[in-house]
Image (cartoon, rainbow, N blue to C red; front, side, top):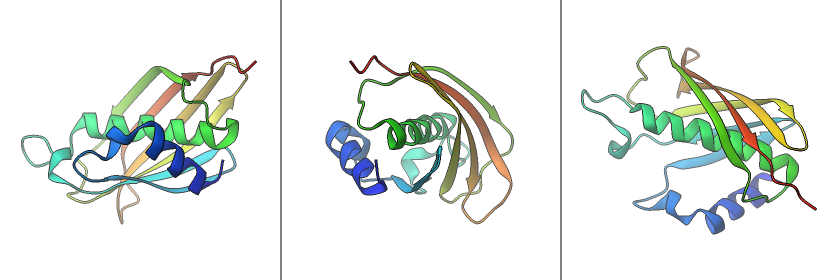
Length: 138
């Protein structure tokens, strides 16, 4: 799937992503990879004014899903089976960038690795890995 096809698919199948205004954006898809941006918004903050772990978790999960679908097509029922997170440092009060590399893309399982950065910074604030189950496409 192209970037535009992926955007249209997510808008159609997951309209709840944009309730309250869109904050997740697909920046690019490439060979076994994807990049997304999460705009800075107060709904992503936790007490103390930092970006919440659940917001970073959603971004990581979504970018892995986008990278997988970019290669296998619009398979809405591909589902997360595992996510693991290492929060490395407090994110800056700005948008986040998530870069995903697929480490494995098999017939039934896909494994991705995600590095999340504050916009304009090269320091990783969160590292995640995730596994997706891909349904039989017969």
